[in-house]
Length: 317
Image (cartoon, rainbow, N blue to C red):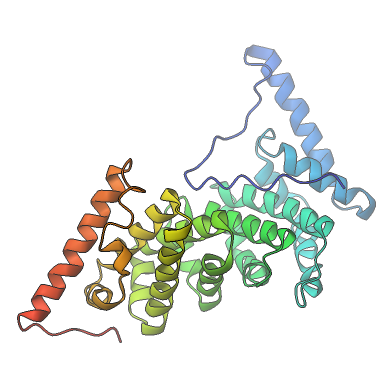
């Protein structure tokens, strides 16, 4: 099987595909009609086992060229079942870890199509209604750091990252479960730098919604799990700096500080490396993140001053 290029997981968004070979009048219409015919045939081929692997690869590679591929995938008979079967088929190879590159590539092609569905405003809720993120949970909590597992982890995060980009409270509510939160934290803990970055971006999106912030900050175990993983990543960045990952980490801390009990708790668990000059060089070209860090320290240190002058610490319950 031809090697699959990992999903595009730019956490800042990306361009939407379109027919670019013709841009005027009837030529563009003919090109788009032809592309749609190709897409329809490839989706039809998914029903046939002998054609499925090639169809998955071609759809994954050309998904940005096919207009309305997401509705086509959702509305064509049997396609959703086929994609789900492909995901489940490799569960037995996850524990103990025995996943081949070919198996990983094939499922990553499926995940690329699910990311397409998750990115489309007309189909993303269908994906959530089918509880697809829960089917990705086994891929995100594996502890193997081998390349086949890392591609699987990264592609799975890409699906959920596409869901949260729209800042939709209904989407956030659907993702607030102990299993899903654990999967993000596991990816932040053991994933490669890009997996950590995408997972932290997802956590940031959850926290920026009031529903997500309340879910994390009114549960002591959840808050301290999040704080511990964020702190571990800060420590790792001392040896392997990443300005983008650091930006998302600081934004997560700043958002947590908007909750008073969490802000008080950060007094004791905010890493010292964020309080001193450790990351000055990393943030030199990023005035926005420097401002976030300054605001975070002012809020946390302000709580510390209040406590030292007779205030009481309201513990997270």
